[in-house]
Image (cartoon, rainbow, N blue to C red; front, side, top):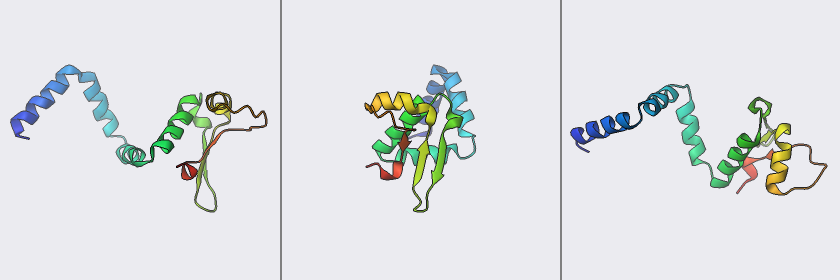
Length: 107
C-alpha cells in the first residue's frame, strides 16, 4: 500500500471515530493484552464460546476461579454463574454445584 493511501486511510478512521481510536490506543498499551487477545483468537471456536459464556453469565468476574490439575488441565469455575449456565445449556440437575468449563476437554 502506498504511503499516501495509508495516510488517507488513517485520517479517515480517526475522523470517523476519534474516541474509538483513542480507546484502541489505550487498550494497546495494556501489558500483555495484545498477546492474550492473539492467544484467545487462536483457540478453537468451541473453547472461545465456552469462555465467552462464562464471562457473560458471571455477575462477578472476581468470583471465577482458575486452577491447573496434575495433568496440566485448566479448569474454570464460577458458582455465581450456576443458574444462568444451567438454564442456557438446559441442565436440570439440582445437584450441580457450579458449572465447570474445561477448555482442554472441549473439541
